Amino acid sequence: MNNDENTHLKRCKECNRWTDGKSAICAYCGHDHDKVYREEVEKRKLNGDVSVPVLKINESDALWLKIVKKPIQVFQLILYALIGFLIYLSTAFAH
Image 1 (cartoon, rainbow, N blue to C red):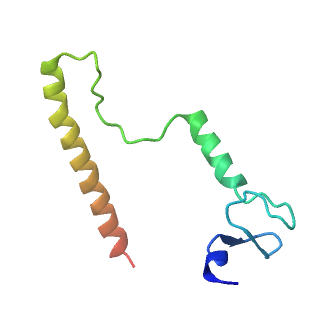
Image 2 (image 1 turned 45 degrees about the horizontal axis):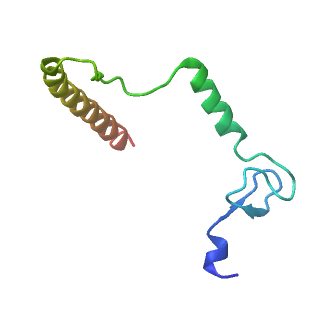
């Protein structure tokens, strides 16, 4: 086999054989590779979206309100990035 054929293969956790990486089901044993992922996505959909809460700017907002909300959005994103970086540093130096 050449490298092009090997790039889209994944090992089945059930039968331990190599199968098509793009397929959700093993061609040999029928194991569903993406079952846990799909269940997690469905669970998150039922609980609501787990996205970063950022102040929304609506089309119907007045111009002055859009001008006020934009810097608040930028500040929120910078704050989230800083918190994420601090979490990264704390986990990196914890080991």
